[in-house]
Image 1 (tube, chains in turn green, blue):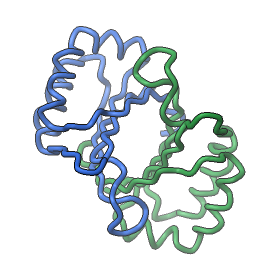
Image 2 (cartoon, each protein chain N blue to C red):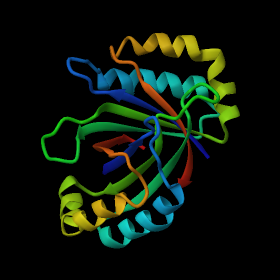
Image 3 (cartoon, chains in turn brown, cyan):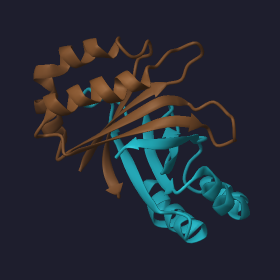
Image 4 (spheres, one colour):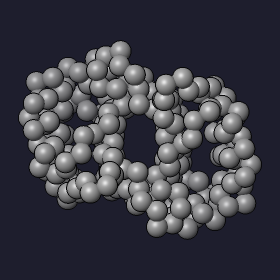
Length: 104
Length: 104
């Protein structure tokens, strides 16, 4: 299983609208990437390891696909629409990683 | 549910022994953090979003606990042992984030 993760760095002064992200962008992504998208999870950054420290990322979205090819095939027709929507919830650029899930 | 994620940055020239991480460090962590540790997953970095690009992180470990308090209580007696073991598999410092799992 392949996981595509989007990390939104919590850089100084950056903004992130978590409600828009969950209720609009994620909903749109699920619609556009179905049925290749097998599952999806969203993490909301609370802190780093010390209490009251700043979380490194505002939020992280994880999308699961059967293969890298399935991800590329699903996202290619919708990439511009999805990228354009990002400016509606954040002014940071996501760090993107494609991982193989080795232990789950 | 609270997720504690350990991101190992894939910085220029850095090393990461993925076999040691999975077969020794993760096994040790599971032993030491039981029964507070509810589940665990490990992602192996393949690439960034473009084919053949460099993954931002060598690996990412995600540990799930019922609460932040449960995580602190579980890790405190073992923190030195677990931190010392890190030098056996990597020369990078992990970025650590505590997240609330909002969608799963």
